[in-house]
Length: 74
Image (cartoon, rainbow, N blue to C red; front, side, top):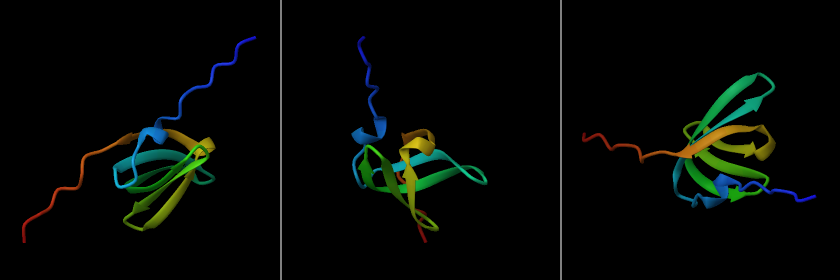
């Protein structure tokens, strides 16, 4: 029997990228949007507006790279 190992797309992301990851928690579904700090097969760590978020792989629903925040001139 041959076993297929699916790639983990977040391992292709680079720290410093802006990402969004949707994940399940005990109180529902959440999105973590911000700067990618760390990737590992087991998790990603994102610096969001409200602080750093550790998202475990088994809770991830989807995720993607997003464009950098636009800078508003003052």
